[in-house]
Image (cartoon, rainbow over all chains, first blue to last red; front, side, top):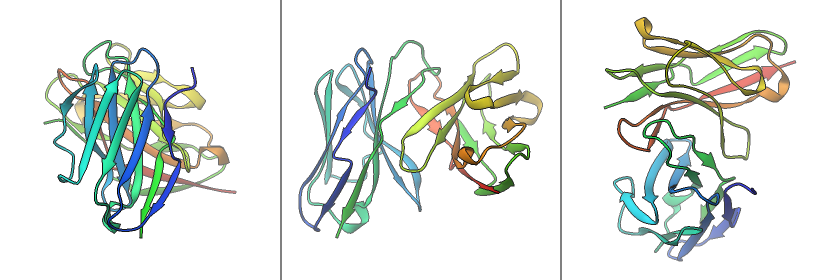
Length: 116
Length: 113
């Protein structure tokens, strides 16, 4: 398997623009997670899905952020409008969902977002 | 609620020296504990995990960790560090009854020649 795939790897945009980050989880994994990593706040869980259904979006910072998972092999994280404070590395991860509390998460390489 | 604390923001060791990265957890019952590593420009990768049984857990890349309930600790060790071990290391705990993983703040390891 190719692992978790994220695109683009780098994104530079201007404040106010819409940004869409994409993720393809490992085939057969039932859980998908979106994280944001910054120097100041570390690794933050934004939202996660089980079988394409959002389970917990309490980490989504505000209404400008939205995430969807239209099918088992694709998810998007959208920021509209983007702001400079959204600059960060965004990771997607997936897990099999075999057993509570013990699942290993497999991370993608991340998307480095810079909002000017 | 569960949490993990990594007291050291960064650590520097010489190549060939031994390494110990500290992790303390807060949890009432038996925790499910993980160590992940993040190399520069990459996502996190699992090094090892502990669920039950033998308190000394072996992982990839020559790492091991020891679960000590009396100290609420799960420290990561390696007997001889290589320059390629320079990375950020995250201790984590599995969410009770769920599938989230709760990550610590991370410890950045620097290796000097």
